[in-house]
Length: 249
Image (cartoon, rainbow, N blue to C red; front, side, top):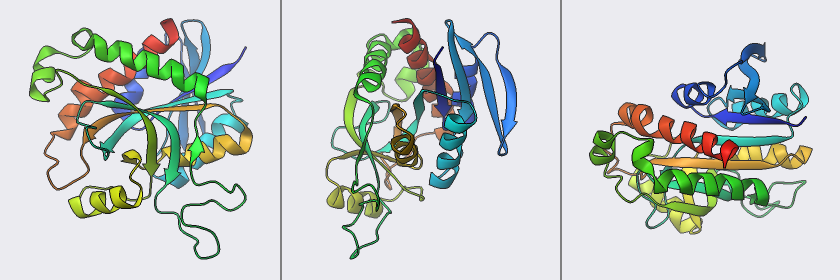
């Protein structure tokens, strides 16, 4: 039987995934707690990614080498970059790039030596399943998120986006930095801190990867979302509902 890894960026999101698993047990490796069990009859292991690219790469490698996963699904939050990518929207990655990687002039900016790539594609079929699950959740949002939260965060018409997500070891939260990223990488839809590291490790081991990110803010000076509340009432609910839909649709 194949084993799927379910990776969350934050504790609240992991809790929503664990709530779907009836028989999980904990195994600890590399300072990380891995929860092994089943979800709708599928063999799964759930884990926190850790913050940043090094922690993410370690987690991805352990999932593949220690737990023998054959597919990885990553869920978390991100800052919106692209036009029209707003709070409460969902972005499913078609490719991931490290925006803070630069060994020029030896190699072109962003290109990873040994791979000859700057953008690492996600798995098309697995990402399609994740996008379909995300779309079904957004289409029936009130079944998953309380009406008070929908109103508070103006989520009446959240959208699904598919495209480039960029990662770096810096929390982007100023207009000057987000503007610089959009100028350098105009196709980027969202920015976070782990996805591209997972993508590179999965490329090394030929393991299919899909990544979904809920937009919590616009990664700029105007970000005013109550993040703890958004995480608890929106992002964690998205994560659980999307994973549930992916395994049942």
